[in-house]
Image (cartoon, rainbow, N blue to C red; front, side, top):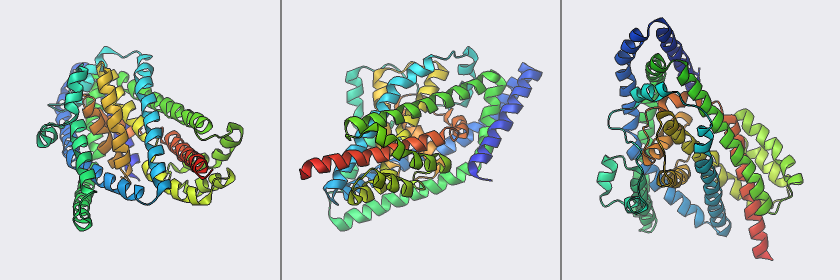
Amino acid sequence: MNATTRVLIGLVLGALAGLALDAYDSAVAVKVADWIQPLGRLWLNALQMTVVPLVFALVVVGVNAASDAAASGRIARRALVVFVVLLTIGVTVAAVAAPMLYGLFTRHPSLAAALGGAVSAGAPSATQVGWADWLNGIVPSNALMAAAQSAMLPLVVFALFFGFAVSRIEAARRELLVTFFQAIADAMIVTVRWVLEAAPFGVFALILAVCARAGMHMIGALGVYVLVESTLYVMATLLMLLVAWLWGGESLRRYVPALVPAQIVAASTQSSLAALPAMLESAQRLGYPQRIAALVLPMAVSLCRLTSPVQYIASSCFIAWALGIDLGPAQLIAGAALAVVISLGAVSLPGQVSFLATNMPVAQAMGVPVGPLALMLAVDALPDAIGTAGNVTADITAVSVVTRQSSADAA
């Protein structure tokens, strides 16, 4: 039985137990929730303790990996720029559309109070921030203080500066530092895996406490999350077709059928890497030069995961909606910018590790509590097939854009 199935079983059993207690006696349900809630919080705190060192290390290593790729030639540099643009387009659509889509659904008042039990002590809360304060807060005056306060946006900005600085120092020392930070990231991933071994029990405790207080409203809210996330994935995927038409110069009548085989493989395996041979075949069918497709597509599989930043924004906006928190433009922009950076840096993370290590920083940067993420972990795998198909579409779109630009240079 894989880890996702075990967590899903924990979610279902906890939800059933909480609903049964609520149906039996609401007073008893609240007492049981108060008793079991600290166990869920303990597990959640164990996850949170790894986020700061893991994210910092991943950004430093990711910056240097991107620097190496950019140094390998003009096509690689052009591909990196295209990746950033495509990710920015996708996350911008998510930041604009997600609050509106969640706003279409009615939130029961008991949901916020019940989810409050899943929020660990000291969790941040969203406040309306002026543009001057927001700009001043991007660059930390004290990086260590930013790390101690889990201020993820300024911490990541410092990590970016640090990573670029490392890429400019003597090669031997650079290799030593990159190896050091890669070792930190690896150690944190091992730690997260240990903590995730207890994920079925942690999720069981958290969802039981929430369902005991909110009843079926929590189940309905998770359904809203899956629906909105899937909708955003479809929107981002369709937008890539528009990009291929306008920027890549493709005819959609020819382009869309060529994508279908790769999308089918991606949806069925839920792995962009497994779909790489099918993507190469689609690129060949579309007439893209082998030298471009063979370089850009493997890079895209790791760096251009279109739906990853979309998912980060969708989850943070869901928490804000469920808790009745209004997100201002500053919070959405901060989350979107960080989502792109985190997506580029979180290369080759395991599935459940990736969900927590990437969503927590974005949620913290947007000022929403991270506690509900533990519950969303169990259901996030449901729309994954749509998301993987979207990633594959973006990867081939990137090849179309790079091919057209390279052809223009050659002309």
